[in-house]
Structures are given as structure tokens and as C-alpha cells.
Image 1: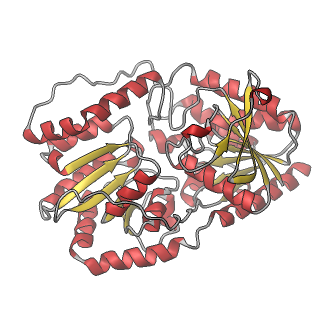
Image 2 (image 1 turned 120 degrees about the horizontal axis):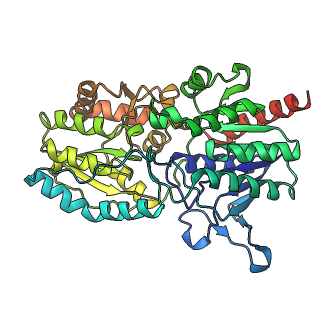
Length: 451
């Protein structure tokens, strides 16, 4: 089968789980013998690749609108890169909202320590955000008119599609839905939209109406809708009035790391255990609940260090919160990590915590388990539907979150059981299986389109 796939994040440019999912899914489809044309919003040069070998086109193969290239790792995948400013996990900043970054804060020893440690990272994050680069969460600023970029992406995607042969259109998340609808209309091919996250996940009840409208349109126009969990499917049915018979669940998966040595950095402290938060530091991921639970844990366990790996629009607030609670000296903020740095931080961790407020799926816990790290996840996550051997807690219940963290720290047998059984559990979650489930959805979409 030939699949025309629309997305805006793929290695080496990964800001979160979506890029990882696109990577795994296309790899699974290719391994099953299917041909994928993946349309990217911006050119990708091979020298930026961290773990995927991409070949850029020659000058003869390029034109002013788009560039084509192949990856040696993806035999049946072609890439079409569009020169666009689209960025993942970003929403337009409302004109009437101005970030309060100048409020006075008191200075304490712990605050000074944490600020000294992270000052350079905060400044670089602010620079990237102001320039429109990187990623940001709800309310994050965007370089230029995002909706104009969405429409521009759609126009160029149609031009590319008219010169390709394929059986189905597969669009990932709202920024590509307009392109998917346009390509399907221009070619007569069935459309499948893949919902990795909804505007309600990203923004709570304060949704951006234009984004919501685009999401709703995509869900209703498509022949089939793929949700990454039943949690997401229920949101689509309740909030978007999606036709129940069109929405199907296909879980994400995990690529088990290759057996190669990763050099582990020296431990932070001789006797310190490490509790890890790895993800975007945004409202959706619940970083403030992680800090609140850390405060309680430190009242009973002193030899603990909390590491927050990631970037996002709440980074400054979280740093200040840790300082205000007097635990800034017990926190390490690493900034955004990729490649071997992610493997290294997992090697150091004693427990991974994902306190997400609303997590459509959540690939990071699977990555943690693949690195032999036990996990504590919020019940408000799609991944909690597929993991049995994981500690689970409501994101808002910071007392219970702290209790479970302490239990893992004090009882090594519990930690070992979670690690061993969790690692065994993820081996059944393969991208080939997810890819085959998507192919089944494609076939039903094609049949529906013919009818």
C-alpha cells in the first residue's frame, strides 16, 4: 500500500512524543513492505541527524517549493520537505495575554543555587521562543501567522500530491488537517486523521476556537480517525461529536534500545537517589504537581535529587516554585535532551514520574521501562491503559504521588518488581503491530470511500 503521510515533526527535529511516534510508525510500515511518502514542513539536512541517516537531494532535484530525499534506514519511505515555519506543540499567543515575567521574587540561598544552575538555559529558551524556534506549550508564541502557514502547507502539499501515486492520506494532528482535507479533495483519495493530542489536552477549558474548529473539521471530514488511546477517543466523542463508528484506537509503541554501551555520568551525590521528570515543561505535563510532591518526599527522604529534563513555557515558573518552597538546591534542570543524553539520564534514574494533567498517550514511560526504570504515571494518561506493572496516581493527588515515590525509595523489591515486569510488558508493544493496525484502518477507510 502507498501512504501519503502529512506531519511536521520527524528525526532529527523532535520536540516531543509526536516525532517519536511518526518515526516508529513509518519504520513499522516500511518493515511491513508499505511505501510511505512523508511530507515535512521544513527541509532536513543530514548533518543535523542524531540517530537517523537522511540523504538530502541534489541541487537538480530541488526547486523553490519543496525538496525530496530518502533515508537509508527507511527503504520504502520517501520524504517531501516544505520550507515552512510550522513548529509542533505550539499555539498562537492571544493578543490580550502578556506573560508576567517581571514580577518581583525574593532571593534565598536555594533560589540563588537553582537560578545559577539554570540561568543560561532559561536565557537560551527565551531567545528561541522569541525567535519562533523550538517548541512551546499552550500560549506559546509563534513566528508569523500560524494559520497562514497551515494554509500554505496545505497548498504545497496538494501540489506534491498531484505528482504522486498513493492509496490513502494520513494526517497527523491539527496543523496538517487542512492539508489532508485539501489533498483528499484534490485526489479523491480517502483521508485518515491521527489524533495524538486535542486542544483540550493542551489548553484545558481555555481552548483556541480556531484550532478547535480545525480539529473538529478534520475529525468529521475524514473517512477514519485514529486516536492514540480510549481516553482520547472519549474526548473526541464527547467534545467533538465525532462519529463513533469512525474513531478507532491504535496505541503507540516503543523501539527497544540497541544493546550498546552508554557511558553513565558520575552520580550527583554519593547516596542520592534520582527521581526523573522528562517531558515538555508545560501545563499539560503537570510539572508543578511534581514539584509539590517533591517537597513532601524531602520531608522524609533527604538523599534524593529531582531532575527535570525538558523545556517549555512553564520552565521559569517551575524554577521559581522550587525556590519558593526552599527545595531549589535539590533540583536539577537540564533543558531539552536528545539522543544518548536521554539514555544517560534514564541510566541514572531510580524512578520516572509522569504527572500529566491530560496525556493522550505518553511514550516516555515506555522509554523509561525500556531502560529498566520503574515508572509512576498519572491515571489521566492513555499509556495507563496498556501498562499494568506501573504505579498510577491522579495527577492532582500529590500526597499519594509522594507516598508512592517514598515506597519505591524505601523498598528495593518493589522497585525491582516494577522494573522487571514492566520491561517484559513493553516487549509486546511493537511499532510493527501499531503499523499493521493502521493499515487495517486504511483498508476500512478505502472501503468506506468506495461506498
